[in-house]
Image (tube, rainbow, N blue to C red; front, side, top):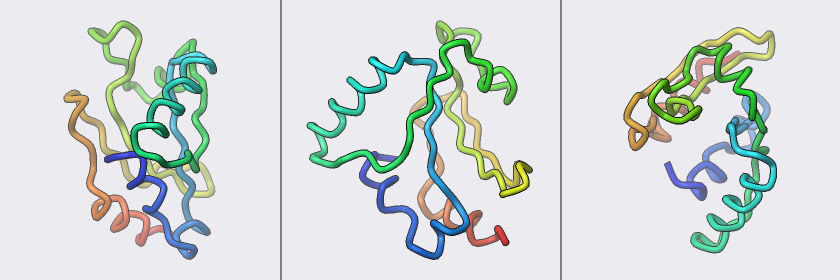
Length: 112
């Protein structure tokens, strides 16, 4: 999924049910530089928060640390409801594999 696709994924009704967040082990400065690089390449602004997890506490809690990835996590997408319950997840060891917009929207539509 490309950055532009993430920005346009949620319509107004979906935004009431879901929020897009990114979690990375990168430092704030590294995340800022990545965001600028993506923005320059795609001519888009970032419309979702990038959260810093340099000590990979969140990554460890969700069990997605890639032992061969120098501290990086496996790519993962989670849908977590307002009560904090994981309702759907997509975890992949292949960093190029991502869920489709259609898959994500189908799962969002199931949230109350």
